[in-house]
Length: 291
Image 1: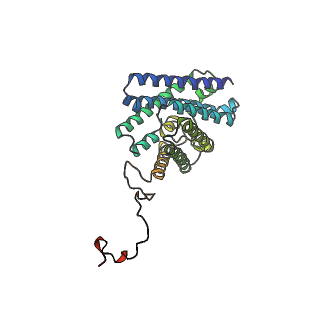
Image 2: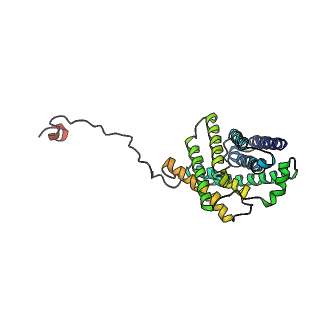
Image 3: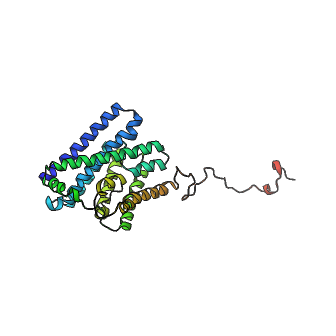
């Protein structure tokens, strides 16, 4: 249990540090700089650091700490509850940023700034996690520190099947985002956290269920077993394709590219009244006069 306590402390310290960074940047920066950059950096760092530590628990915990899948999935659910409550509108996911762009809800410059911020936050989280593992505060961290240079790939299936799995997970995740944009946080956050937990349980053994290109790049692209091109096909192409399909299914079009609805027939707002013609009206001429 000592290893679990160290990991829980790591989660708490990471979330507290990122929350402090959000509050400081909100007070010091303009609203636009905070929304497009600072909060995305903080959210990406929080998500990646917690994911890296969670990966340690999932890969080493079962045989080094005796952690069962029920405990690990409960931690995933609780972590995404915390993420949803503290991200302050940030996505920490390039697919979500590109979704907003395709929905014509964000400009190109804002989207590019978010993508850069997410990459920066992920890299900062990777450096932070490696530093904490080097301190060897628990047996899990000791083992992870020894294995860090020879990490195993998160892709444990063929490339086509992995692409399909990641694309399917992204499709359902983005469809849920599109269906719950204005729901109260008390309903939206637990729903998304439960969805992520279910997909982690179902798809985790195959691809680790990232459906987040930046997160996958941070966690597994350095690991041996597959080439960068194969990783990109699974963890970039798959989620982006799933996102585009979700937008098409929900909207019937890609608003940024074209407005024509390709899937759904739009009904006219005005209905022509239907009724029987009065007797003799067939023979009525202009003005209602019978010739």
